Image 1 (spheres, rainbow, N blue to C red):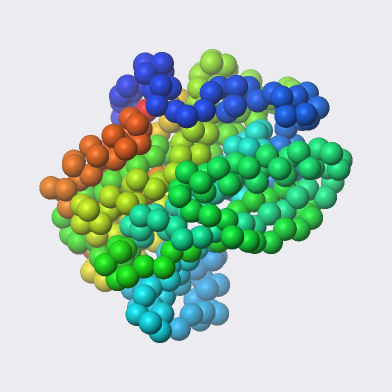
Image 2: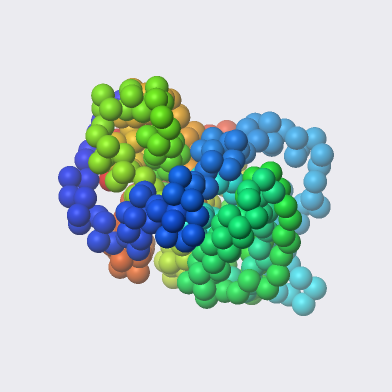
Length: 391
């Protein structure tokens, strides 16, 4: 695979930052004393996993699920009704459809408020991948850190809950309950549910040969989060290697863009899917973009695969992946947190979908990154001449 680079608009960071909702003081230079915590406090210090991927490997998970034969074959939106994609989609006895999903997160940013917002955005993203324009209610899953001093735990937990709640308010949904426990690590997530008619959502199994694939957020969040943590670790060997390829300002901007992206809802991307007659979608998270493309293609009614010809990456993440640590970003398996929707849509509708989405998301970009092709094996790939687009 070639590594053709295109810097796009990346040489104008001021212009890009005008569209982001949070300041650098919130995303990168978080001051814990501003909320009553010790000056050297950081949320990521309270999790052994830090920015590491935490999902069970995709092949291992799918093999286990197949051996257990879970489900009854009536999960709508996946080939043969399997448990496979983002949500459980079930027809109720009264003819409506219940769409539900769950997810939770360990700490990956310093600021507990933003951790809460990212947690909510990621939970809701699975619903938006079904093309729904609303979430009816959310249950919160919350683990307060058992090992934190009591006062710090109270502040941290309050801020995570506030961030989660504010994101739900932005999504025009409501937290109606949930579960709270003590745990060695702080964790936040939830269960999101929509009750809809058949005309209110886009089943995830309708991709057609000739569709293009649109991505609504850039890749590289795992790289950015790790670089930020290396930078803040005394004597870290990876950070020393980073400085041969990027500046401290590059690292800060990389993290800022990643946090703003992770905290942004996919609500507009999902709500436009029906209007522009999208055929299928998934969100890009822990299995990486190629992992999720493969998962999507395997669950289509038609025999199709996805060919990815463009990978939009947060600026400077490809050089870190190439020269410092291989997160498998360019091969498509770098884990993403609260990533974009990957939408299969007609080539005629895609430009209008992107144009309206960018207006609604206040300038945040979306890209055509691939094509849906005929494939008896339902195989998804990254093309040999794939363009690495830095944004």
